[in-house]
Structures are given as C-alpha cells and as structure tokens.
Amino acid sequence: MSCTRVRRRRRSRGALALGVFGELLITAGLVLALFVGYSLWWTDLLADRQSGRAGERLRQSWAPTTPTPAVPEGPGYRAGAGLGFLHIPALGRGYQVLIELGTGPEVLNEGVAGVYQDPYRAAMPWDAVGNFALAAHRDGHGAKFHDLDALDKGDAVVVETRDRWYVYRVDATLAQTTKYDTGIIAPVPEGAGYRGPGRYITLTTCTPVYTSRYRMAVWGSLVRVDQVDARRTPPPELRGN
Image 1 (spheres, rainbow, N blue to C red):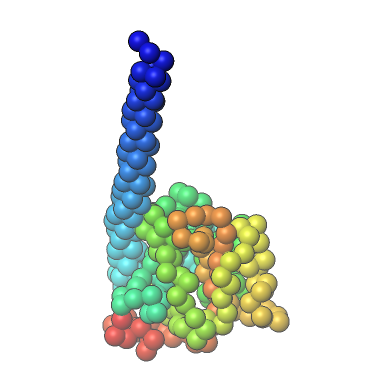
Image 2 (cartoon, rainbow, N blue to C red; image 1 turned 180 degrees about the horizontal axis):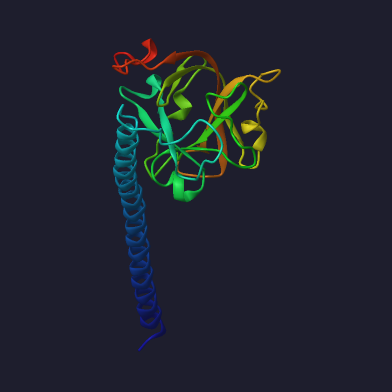
C-alpha cells in the first residue's frame, strides 16, 4: 500500500470523525436549547398556577364574612404571606401580580412580586414614609417583570390591599446597575432623584433578559390613596384594563 493511499485513508477517517463530532455538537446544542425553552415555559406554567391559586385564596380571605385580614397592617409578617396585588396598566390589559413578603427563591419562584426584607426592610404602602420595594423574575417562574423596561415616567403603578388602592406614578427608571447596588431599594432610593423621605415604590428585576448579571429599577411616588368600596371599584387608572 502506497503512502498516498494511507494519507487519504487517514484524512477520510479524520474527516468522518470531525463530521460525527460536529453533528454531536449540533445535536447537543439543539437539545440544550430545547431544554432551556422547555424549562422556562414549564416554570412559567407552574408559577402562574401557584400564584393564581394563592391570589384566589387571598381574595377569599378579604370577603366581608372573614373576621380578620390575612395580613395585619403591622409587624409580624412571615415570608410568603400575601398582602395584596400589583397592577401596572402599561404592561397589559388586566396585568395583575400577587404580592408576598420576601424575595428568596421560595417566594419569587411562586410567580409573585416579593417585598424586600433585606438589606432594608421595605416600608408597607400604608406606612407614613418609606420605600415599598419589590422584586420579581424577569424570565421563568412566571416572568412577572419581563417587560419592566417598558415602563416610563408618568406611568401608573397601583397596589391593591384589602381596604385601599395605593396609586403611584413612575418618576424615574434605571436601565442597569450592579446586583450589589442595594442603594436602589434604600428608604430614600439612591439614583431616583428624591431628596428626602417620602412614600415611594421601587420595582426591581434582572437584566438583560435571560441573565441575572445586572439589575434594573423603576421608582415611583405615591400620589393618591383610594378607599375600597363595596363593589371593589378600581381607581380610574385601572378602568378598562
């Protein structure tokens, strides 16, 4: 057998091996892409079901026959306790997110917006001053803040509790900051332009989409508090949504 034939045979075997390896890489990439897509879809589905049921339970606890509210307006909260709903008309017709205490995976993975308890304990909407700071997933587990970057100055943000509607207006947004920037959820949030104590709301999530490398923030201030009536009529900002 000549040297030329040996080289050709080796090249053909090498080309075949490379082809097989390339096909394996392509297959692995497709499988990984399908797995990621399926995981996001599945966690969204589960989280939506869980948060929907929890929201129904909270509303049932608000029925007139219930002797006490599910979460009292005072100390003693526990992680996962529901306190109301977040409504943002700019994010779609009927947009509603259950609000629970805490921002750990055991809370946020349920498809809710969680109230920060660390490093700052967020003020509640009914407190005289402070920052009602919330977090929610951008992708997967309900992805409740997936489109948070669509909010702009002047947009309404409404928090619904058992007895009141708290109406906020967006004052400022921050497209990106380090995940270690805790100042964005401080009682007087840094970067929002506020000069002193007030009644603020902060919404945070990961950015860019499909990553958790950075954080983004939306800040607003309270403009009005409406009493809930017998029919639970939403404020003007939510009518038609």
